[in-house]
Amino acid sequence: MEASQNAKDSETILTLLAKMPMLKMFTRPQLAQILKFTKIYVYEFGESIIEEGHTGKTIHILISGSALVVKAGVKLGVLDKPGDIFGEMSVVDGSLRSASVVARRKTICLCINTAFIEGIGTDQDTILCQNILFRAISEILAARLRSMNEENVRLRAKLSKECPPPGKK
Amino acid sequence: MTSISDMIASARMIKGEASRAKSYLMRYDLPKSIDLMISALHAKSETPIVSADRIDIELMARDYCQEFDRNQYVREVLAKVDYSKPQYLNYSPEKEREVINRLVVIREKMEEIEMGEQAKKQKELLEKREALIAQGEELIRSGQLPKARVTLKRAAEQFGRESGVLARVGKALLDAKEAKDAREMFLQAIDLFPKDPDGYSFLVEACLAGEDLPGAEDAYLKAIKQFGEHPQTCLNLAKLYLRMRNRDKAEEFARRAYELDNSLAEAKTIMESAGYGGYDMDEREERPAGPARKPGSGTGSPSSGEVFNV
Image (cartoon, rainbow over all chains, first blue to last red; front, side, top):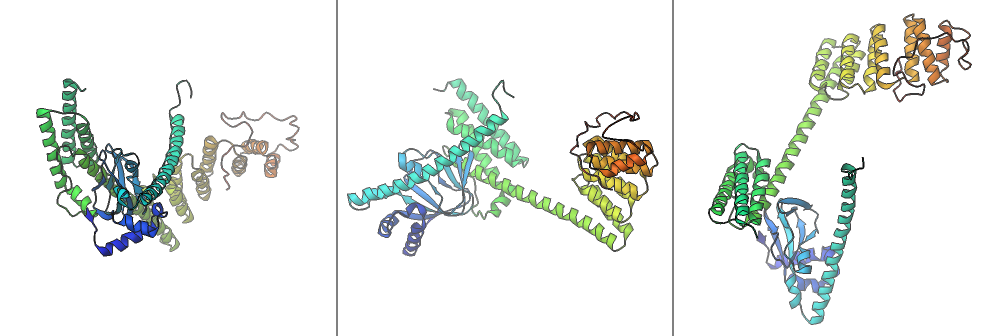
């Protein structure tokens, strides 16, 4: 895993942050504040970006590459679209990471350390940033929940077709 | 709380899986090897294992990781993803999950490579098949019939089990006036793919081209047996029987065709010309007793069979 830290990279990161749908509600000065707690990481094939069972206060945004979501040795899904976000659930409820995210080729991620929020400025600034951030995370989780509900319905229909209850053909 | 006996049983199971994982690895059955190792490591991370068993399992895991990294196929896969480090798997106690994740990812990559290779192989086979048939057709067009026959027969031998190939090859031979060879192809096609109507149509065409009227009759009857009675098929068979000077059968099948579709004026004409003039189909009066319908010959409603236009 390589991390970027120099000034030229800061400008690049700021530009990338501004493009992220999740962060579109932040103003440029606010993004510049967030920048202090943001890094770009480069992951190699097989490298864990997030580990199941660990604590975490970071949110990751995929810039390029692709990653697998793995839980208990089982592949759950793939993250391969620039702008895909992961790691936000632990930030919301403080629980341990529910799954691992592993790079399946060279992958570049933006990593935002949400512990920043406490030190961002005045109390009002902090509250405002927290609100915006949690609003953004809520939208992501709501979309995921909707998608999982649809998948649930589809799988139930398939299951009842292939394994009908006893007594029915 | 896990009992001692449970711990011993778990340890035994984990060691068994780890041992089999290595065995499959040495035999280059990587998917099975990886699945077993993932299972073993996952169990190890979830179950308290103590003393000698724990040490044994950790040694086995370390040994597996080293062997895995030395495996030639693994090196090839890692080269494809530009993985530059000398070690891919690095086991240490309590870090099972990291190894599991790496195994999951490399397994997925192997599947992707294999699917890509299979797709490539299938594409090559498809191209080879099409090239052979096209070559045969080209040889026919250029008048090189002996070579065309050899090429088309080779295509039939290599790809005849695929749907539609024998019918295509037969059609090409038929177009080259090789009715006998074409007939063989169509007979094989019907044998392998009895539900494909093309085989029957072409077989009739080949038989008629070779003046093999009994062969054509047989083809029609096979089609009727497979697909049921279809008005056009019955009509065509009636016409064939006229050519064979079998008036009774001609009349019978013309009548069947007309019963299925009373817009077929040709069927009525055949019935009349077959020597039963004055026959009023609609009234069904004083109709001579015809031969009994063959079993499975339909209920009079049009079947879903194809039209055999010859």
